[in-house]
Length: 76
Image (tube, rainbow, N blue to C red):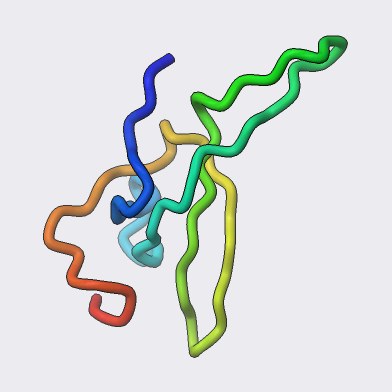
């Protein structure tokens, strides 16, 4: 599977109008069950701020949509 985003991209959860805008930090490796191999093509770590608190979350890249002209962390 290919990577849809790169670090620094602004994203939002698909289908949720009230979801915060988040900044992509990196792709997170995930180990396969019963194997020592890992892959890093689907899970994305994102950061967002809510009421002056920093939040981190890991999302599947297929759950996210890229935002154009996001304007930064503190602009909606």
